[in-house]
Figure 1: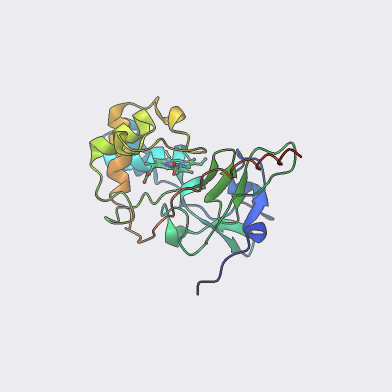
Figure 2 (figure 1 turned 90 degrees about the vertical axis):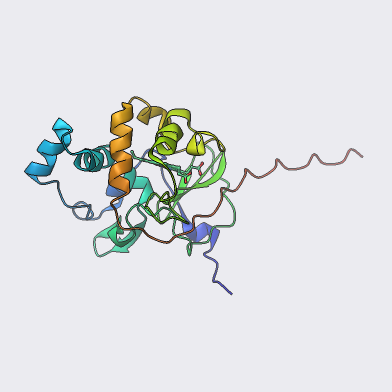
Length: 208
Ligand code: HEC
């Protein structure tokens, strides 16, 4: 039987807007390497859509939520071997957590499972794996997801903290560039679980 991660141990309380950088004990955690000057120039001019897509993925902080965090020598750091593959399927989470007063949301040790008033959401696999990632999506479906906040433009609504409302400001060509870049990253087989709905409010005690 798969060993369940204790829900209490799986979550650490923090502000929803924080980033893994806040955890580092000395210096920032490893991130993808800086863009070369040539890649940056191509990204800014838009001459190379894949370079522009990478630039926008870095600027849009997609890694912060979609690349799991692991414990490194300097504290939690992005696990680039699992880049953009979302909540790791082996990090089983079975329920959200009851937060102390004054707290809105909490994230797991991997920074990929989020517990809040919406239940528990899991960051998704953005790699081009056809079965578990977005490899079977078309560019238009990707653009429609970000523009409408619904999976492939027609499925269920995307849950927080996916900031699709912020990414809507991007031009269609920029969203297509993000898609073009995502199609070039190594495909990773990782089946992200479905979200867990919020716990039902406690049943009213029977009147005596
Ligand atoms: C603050 C955290 C956060 C950031 C930053 C973020 N995402 Fe997400 N994203 C999520 C979560 C959580 C989900 C899952 C929502 C759900 O299941 O309803 C998600 C879902 C998605 C989906 C839907 C995939 C599917 O299979 O349904 C796409 C596409 C996506 N994100 C793309 C991006 C891109 C591109 C960026 C960067 C430009 C980005 N995200 C940045 C948290 C984030």
